[in-house]
Structure formats: structure tokens, C-alpha cells
Length: 246
Ligand SMILES: Nc1ncnc2c1ncn2[C@@H]1O[C@H](COP(=O)(O)OP(=O)(O)OP(=O)(O)O)[C@@H](O)[C@H]1O
Image (cartoon, rainbow, N blue to C red; front, side):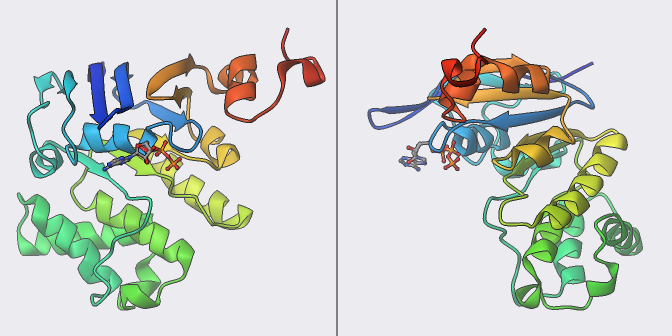
């Protein structure tokens, strides 16, 4: 079932066209990866989907409703959530309080329901033992987990992850990958921008390559990664160098 449909989404900063007529259809429950070189427009694309930025042209339809003119808060209430490249917790609050803010902000729950929801999220993100730890004293992995946990507070149906694996060791990545797989297995649609491609490929069933604000490739992840233009533009591999260009 179609979850989100993006048509002709465009955005310029001055003379720089950062999103250039992007079309994308996302099915409910999909796990879609987005890669592309630095400056390709990936984060801007997320900002446009999440309502943190408004486009110059194009539409975003979510669950059959045109949300193009909706701001981030309205889209969040419609069960869309995102994480940020640089985690933005409330540093003076504990892990538990940070997650509770998200759960309460989303509305629709009593206090006791919000607390129970928080405890479930802390378990799911492996943060239960850090519930009373101030966010400011977390390790990088736990800061990433908290970023995820805060996004889950609003019970999203669509989760946008922006480079959540950056800076983690391989073991830490695997840990986070398991959690994201679990979230997706519970029916949450995931769109994940990531430079750590091996982590991404463990989760996604579809890979989109953005380049210069446009969709360069969209398809089965390993097939997309093997395509000569992706190897050349994204990975800097010359197609002829190893015979991959055929
Ligand atoms: N608010 C803004 N004002 C002006 N230029 C911007 C703004 N936001 C982003 N840009 C520019 O738009 C381009 C795309 O930026 P964006 O952050 O979307 O790329 P990205 O693909 O996410 O890059 P990275 O992989 O490095 O995070 C860059 O050249 C960036 O400098």
C-alpha cells in the first residue's frame, strides 16, 4: 500500500538547486536507503519530507493526504518522525525524561500510558539501564540510541533516519542495525540516509541514489551499488578500472 508519494519536489538556495524535481513513491513497511555524495541534497530532501523546510515546487502526499503545506509539528502528529545527523537531546534531562517529552508531545495518551510507552521504547532501544543517566553523559552509541528513542516517542509510522550510524564502530553499527530491523519488522516504514553503506545494506530492501538534487538510481540495493554510474559518481571508482563497467 502506498505510504508516501513525492512528486516534482524542488528547492533552491539562491542559485543552487538542491532538490531538482524529485519523484519517489514509498510503500508502507518498506526500508529505503538513500545515499549520495556530500552535498547531493540528502538532508535537504529529508527536511522537505519532514516539514522542516518548504519546497519551491512539488508535492508530498502522506497516507493519501497532501501534507505539502504542513509544518514539522503537523507532520509529526500525522505519525512521521525523524532523527538528526547531530543528535539534539535535551542535555539537562535524563534519558527517560528525553523520551517522555516525545511521547507526551505526541499527545493522545494518559500519563501512565506515556510512561509505559517510554519504558517499552527504552527496552527496544537498549537504553533501560541508562534511564536515569543525564543525556549529556552518554557515549556516542547511546546518544544515537537516544536519538532513535526520541523519534519513537511519537509512535511513528514513517521514520526518517539521518546518518545515524556515523562515527560508530562496526560492533556498535551492528547493534543499531538490529534495533532498526526490529522497528521495521514492527511495520514502521524506514527511510535511512547513510554514508556507512554496509550498515544500510543490512536493513534496506531498496536503495535510492541522489546526485545533484536528482534521483540517479532507485532499485534493489546490491544491483544499484553495482551500477557503473553509482560506482563512479558515489564511490569514485572508474568503471573500466576493474571491469565493473560492463
Ligand atoms: N540552508 C541552506 N542555505 C544555503 N545552502 C544550503 C542550506 N542547506 C544546505 N545547503 C547547501 O545545499 C547543498 C546540499 O546540502 P545537503 O546538506 O542537503 O546535502 P547532503 O547530501 O545531506 O550532504 P552530506 O552528505 O554532506 O550531509 C550543499 O551544497 C549545502 O551547502
